[in-house]
Amino acid sequence: MRTSTQIKAEIEERFGFFPPFFEPALSTPDILENLWQQTLSAYVNNPLPAIFKETLFAYLSRYCSVPYCIVCHSCALRPLGILGKDVLKLIAQPPPKTPQDLDTELETLSQQPIPLYKPDSDASNDLASDSSVEQSLWRCSVFVFLQPSQAQECRAQLRQLLGDVMYAHLVAFLSYVKLCHQWVESYPELSFEADKRAQLHLAPLLQEEPFLEKFFQNYNTTFKEERLNREAELANQVIKLQQLSRKLQESEERFRRAIVNAPFPMIIHAEDGEILQTNQVWTELTGYTHEEIPTIAEWTERAYGEHKDVVRAFIAGLYELNDRLEDGEFTITTKDGSRRIWSFSCAPLGTLPDERRIVLSIAKDITQGKQEEEELKKNQERRFRAVFNQSFQFTGLLTPQGILLEANQTALDFGKFQAEDVIGHPFWETPWWTYSLEAQQRLQDAIARAAIGEFVRYEVEHPGFGETTAILDFSIKPVKDENGNVILLISEGRNITEYKQIERALRESEAKLQAILDHSTTF
Image (tube, rainbow, N blue to C red; front, top):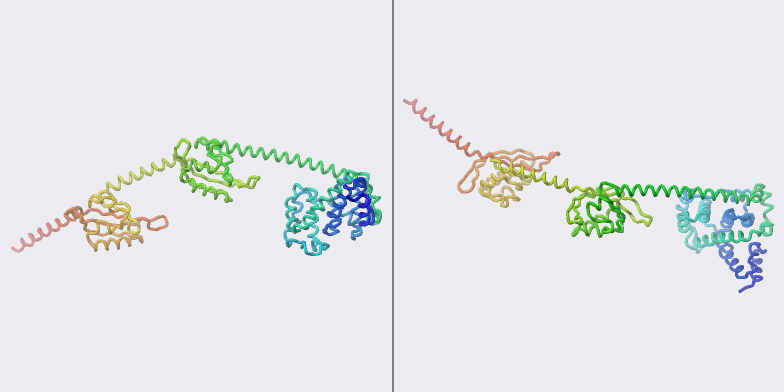
């Protein structure tokens, strides 16, 4: 290990003098060596542009309680061509306080090619030829130093833009500045007047800008005032955060109570399958407590049984939603084995701190309504059947393509057919019509005309069961929807056999009477 004398000689050779900054470490060679090596790697040999380093060092030294660093590094700016008025303007400017203060800078940096620095280029070159880009880099670096807890976006942008090599050098430099501040604050007796930088350049700077002298003279007072202001501002921020936290807790509690006390079953679940909360009504209607169904897998296993995989896949798609969705109706099985019909709707609730997406699902129990609806349908069906089957006419319902959907009992009894013998078949292929190819073709033609909206009517003679035959006043009537499209055909056959027989007998009687009359006039 080198002696302090050897290390001091190297420092003097490098700087041309021995800065007072190192004097407190002279009695401990290992500390002096460590301090010197950090100075070399993080500051002296750091490939960041010299003017970028020195302006950043001078400005950040405003936040050191003793004036040694700010005076010495302000003086180091003069050999780099910076005048006294520009030094004052630099160190007196307000810092960015919030991420929003850097919106312009971050926008500027986001539009630059990546990375700005190429490791194989001349490290002495500036990081950016555009002054606005360099200023943006500089201000973001200040914010990383002063507000590390709020600087995540700045750090990410700097790392992406600078590349890993230059970003590491920037981090090392900022860490070194913090070390220097802590070091000189631990030895407040250090005097900038003994530093050669101040001896050579302080007087010319003060002559160029008299207000700079006042700034340095009042530095301790200004620092204390600014520190008190920062502490007061920080205290206000803490109070505001506490107030916001309290309001957030109150809001969350109101939301929790709204969920728990809601009159509908509600459940909050995360995309990894965890059920975060179920409300009281959910438990009352299903019988399952939150502890019994901690996950979507457990809930679907119990409630949906063999359909669980289909329901899980459906639920998995809910986390992609950006708006409220009506899920539809699902039949669930409760803990006591009863089956309930629930109508679900859901809404995205954003993400948890761990980035998991969460969804609120709300159910409405429509079991009773569905039962009443089903009973109403059955009653309507029974009334329809009663009217349909008790009609003396032969009635059938067809699709527009001529497939028989229904046939009333009167028509079935006429041919002694069973419903299954004719339902689902083309009407012209049913036993009522197969007695004549001509009758079948005429019926097909009638169906085709009715399918385009025409009411078709004609008389036809039909053989029935055994030796029975009926003469029918047959018609096909189209049924249309609200758009005028034919959706159903109604076939009707009114048995007019007796009427035709009476009509024939009447004609025969009239003919006989006429014959008698004609015969009587011949005498």
